[in-house]
Image 1 (cartoon, rainbow, N blue to C red):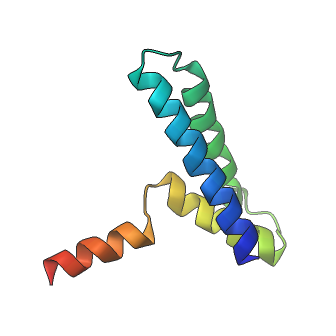
Image 2: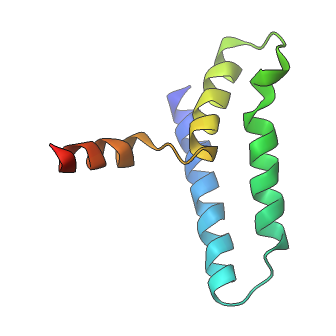
Image 3: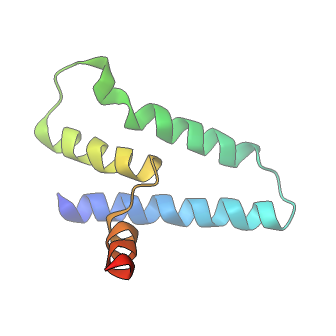
Length: 83
């Protein structure tokens, strides 16, 4: 399950990188905004209060952390800088 989650997260980061690279080079931003809006909708599916399988719930929880820009590696690195 962790491999699938890591694969999706790397795909999402790659897509965000491509979108922002296009934005820097004056490319169209509509696809970037559609992608971010879709990720927000998918990540907030657990708020609908429906029964989900455990693996889907874990995946959506990690996706929610990503959409909230709450990335554990960055947070732990920042905490180490403060200490």
